[in-house]
Amino acid sequence: MSTGFTPKKNITNGLLWIFAVGQFGWSLLSGVISTWLVHLYTGIHAPGDTNGIFGQFITQNPIFASITLFGLITAVGRLFDAVTDPLVASWSDRATYKGGRRVPFMRAVAIPFALVTAAVFILPQTASMAANNVMMFVLLMLFYFTMTVYCTPYNALIAELGDTQEHRINVSTYISFTYIAGFSMATLVPTLAGMLEGPAGSQENAIRIAIGIMCVIAAVAMLIPAFLIHERDYIEGKPVQSPVFSSLLKTYRNKQFRRFVYSDVIYFFAVTLFQTGLADFETRLMLIPSDNTFLLTVLMTVVSLCLYPVVNRLAPKLGKKRIIIVGFFAYAAVFLLTALCGTGMVWGVIIAVCAGIPMAILGILPQACVADVSELNTLETGEDRSGMFFAARTFAMKLGQALSMVIYTSITAAAVTVLAGQSNTDSVSSLAPELLKQVQTPYRTTAAVATVACLIGAIIFLFYNEKEIMSKIRALHKEGAK
Image (tube, rainbow, N blue to C red):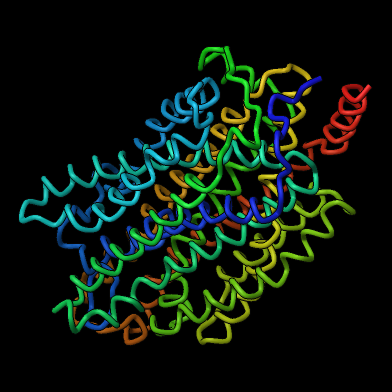
């Protein structure tokens, strides 16, 4: 029985590394938005800091109840994604382009994706706050759409290039490495801006130029696999005939996939709370100078990368499910430490080292799980809908991220209000003890929410049956070889 994506040429680890460069590009753009959007556009700017440096351009006060502008935008963005994710997945699955079902989309949208990301930090800075609010809304909708058009076909290639269990784990490892590299590079925006501030003339211009440089690097990285991988040479991808919503319903009827997605939404909700608040946790809870936060990111990244070979080797022996559950509990412990942390660099080091463990696990193995489910579905039905499976996972990611943005900005609005009344204070550490507590409590609350979410995600993932999936795949491959 054909899998629908039988390789025509041998897939090598070198090819998988070329593919992984694209992940570096889009994770860099995603990291710029997730790390710096709220940080630069909300809060009160103090001399020498980057927090709130563009805050005067958009509405800061809650628009409805405790929902902020960014909370509202991201919530609407997820509804937008609910339509665009399956549409793009269906277009890709059903594509008949000469260049393949995936690569043509990646080629077409890489540059627009990078341009829109840069525009988010450049255009909504006019004299009209209302116009800025509208521009921010439109640009973020375009950001979500262009990310979907690139990422959905790209992620489908994980299953198609991962033609064996070894290749699936390897490609998941490689793209996890480049994801962390891209996200880590995104944290360098203030460092690069500091180097450019003299020639740029101001801190604001330096930040804009730094983000622009990041976006150029990301665009080049995303185009590398799009032009160096000749899809038709490696993948015999047969266009799917099912209409978009029929394909989507078939995807969600898969019991094992539903269990995976439920836990995945919660995972992305929790980890995005942590990532969005990381700079604030370090500077406002641990009172670490902002100049030192990059060192902690480097430490966290190095620990994670050192564990990649361990995760890669243990996954075939222990099974992906067991290790992923360990990752959930490890992240829960990290978030709990953050909620209870004291002040000082030592807390930042402890949390960075501990966070590297689940970052390695959950950065590698979930993609391999989706590829497993997708392959089994193809073997059983003869219809390759990998695009739709990964689109559903991408939607889970965006839904979790959106919920976290709403919760984070809503909970921390109280801290922003307190800081707004202390505009003459140069740093959080100089606040009076009672005011410092008022500022820190919302951030501790967000970390506690992330802790509970991770525990719930682990419980849900216990119901995912990896053994059944893998045994069926092996059986169907043996049957097809006869």
